[in-house]
Image (cartoon, rainbow, N blue to C red; front, side, top):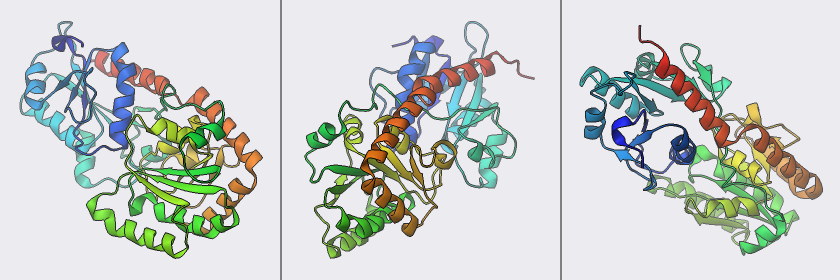
Length: 356
């Protein structure tokens, strides 16, 4: 572990539930840790090998500048974290500069706009997300995929067979089972299409929280009515370690959110050699090459989703090539290592800029 006294970068981690933001934070840590002395504010889900601190330690650590006279950087992704930073800075006099990373593709509340206006620097992950900010961000740095975790298998069929699911072709959708994620859109499309393709199986991987149980029950009722319980399978929540093998087994990875901040799962699928089928939310229509890596359909459009799913299953040789295209595209352009280097570069820039 790094020496706490000389920590230059403190990363906010206020989320109590495991989310996409948490996943990205953890995956980036291994790369950032090699480049800069860091600690994480909040210990939820953070592996033991990284320094974590509580708010009291944060205040104590940041009351003075670094030994080289520079300010520490506090890196935030959530409103809670911006608030923590501002309390530290303006109530306790912490010697920090606060960076906020904005991924949201929606109009911010007046309060969020005010919080963002108090940041020393703002980054966005896409042009679309940047367009919702009051002023242009200082940098646009897209999220990347951890290619040490997610990579195309030597043989997709073998990877599928090892998972012991029925059929010979897997269609996976990953993430929380809730209305905003559009799980029902894939299920409705699958109910339309699967009777024509007995070899295809849909895998739904993600936890269902208590408030989303009624949503899941409705979907299960539809599946039973269509007599497809053996071919549309809910896996529940899987561990961080189990996910790469699941992605490698999928021929198609779907992501059909009704709204999405960024949405990394299709890119993890692409890195794993899967063709993708996504809605036009998040950065998907900005990054995915329609007809090359898979298909991007209109949001909340079951008919279009059914048509493209049919094409992907029917034209298996073309779909395989799409998966190969996708894996190479992610490898060349969207690795997490590239993201980490760009983030550290920006952090250093902010740290070295004089406060006016």
